[in-house]
Length: 631
Image (cartoon, rainbow, N blue to C red; front, side, top):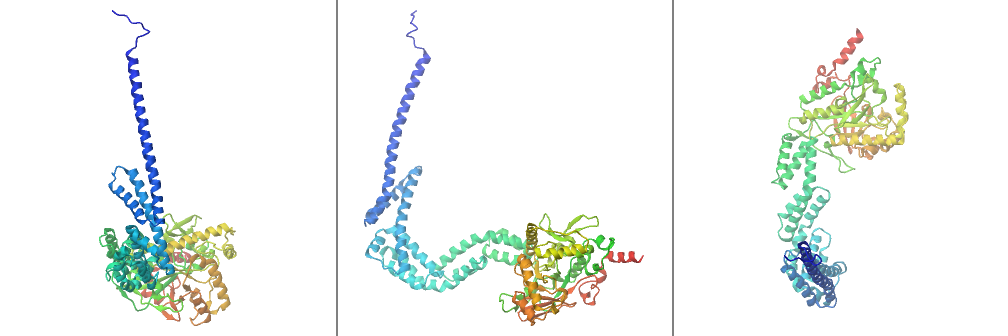
């Protein structure tokens, strides 16, 4: 047995570790060499890339166009031959090509802009550059040729400018292939300019359907440049219009404007013939429409004030007001609606009776209604919610509920605030139409007339109303108010929000003078002028353009009277008077309509027998209250 000294003995583990160190050293050396090679290669490649574009530009500056073109085509060949896996290098080469193209484009654009703007005459140097740079210049000039033809089509440049541009570039050899066909089409382009510009005006106004229809008409009449342009614009407009038009159509369906929705989706079905959603929406609209015919005859117009929302307050409270005879209960109004519906009446928009596009001359329009229906206009009178009517059980204001629906709010016998859609005529009519969509023609509801001397929709919206509001509150033995500017601003925001919901759902608005002037006919012009100024400042600023004036108590002013002319000059085109029988007439730049006032005192008029059965209308609570008093 041989014994080795421990001093010289090397174990197996140490031999393995020594081998590991050697392998690691070799790998490190290989990596360093590879890194050096890569650095050298990349460094040279970056230098190559950095030098190529400046060399290209310098060659152009010095007029060495063949050298510049050779550089461009060399890089282009490298891109075409490169491996798809070599993405980094390929991206760098593509960027170089883009940079070169940008250099050429900038110079070509400068030359072309001079031709168009300054009647610039091409120099031999310009011609040499444009001709020698072959595909680089021809692509840019081709775009400019098409662009100036588009501008000509759209009326942005005159024909002499176009002709001069062609005269300058067309003789250059590599441009004639594009220029000659376009030059031959200039007369066709010129003949299409009017229709194309009309289509563009419609597009700019947001009337996408009319724009597509016009472009389609032109496209069917022209081939070549005009036809291609129209096809491109039709595709662009279709992409732009689809979502907003579908949203508009859905909104029309939601707000029961079925006739408008039918027209919209019918037009869209032509433009998008394969779209199933449009077909489905069109079917929904047509299921709620019927044949429409022109109507010539009398037009019924009924008018109501705020409703009695709480019979307990109105008829069974300790304090009774004889003024309850001025108001209908919500049940009575609902029964009137039922009777009118059963007798074939349909709500219409009074503004459909006129064409007011010309502010100086009003044109009569033939009213259209569904076949077999009779038109009906509803006016809600002076919806300010005066404190003087609280003891009649009326609402105290309008509010929006969680579903963004307009509701009436009143205080019951126990002093609790109650919010209900059916507490007021607005909500009752809205609900009734939702149950009977054929009671409205294209979503029309009614007209809400607004004064302002105390409040609007129950809200104090101006400092000038505070004194009148407090006087009415004091007379009703209610606490005074002292709203801050912030309170008034908040009230205006709430009224605006309510107004927007009402307008969106088919309601229209009218003035009934700021102070609800009881006898306009015997009121001096200056008083009316001052009153209207206040209405415009405090109320009109909330409601925007209002074209309807409802004379309080029906005491109208003749249309030729200087005071009526004053109102017409302030934008009013429709005036409501008062009368139990239906009557309307077209005057000098205005329409006059009589409204039949609906109150407990007037319901048994003979003239109303065609509208409803009096015995069905009267709320039993009135009789019960009368019996109770007699007992």
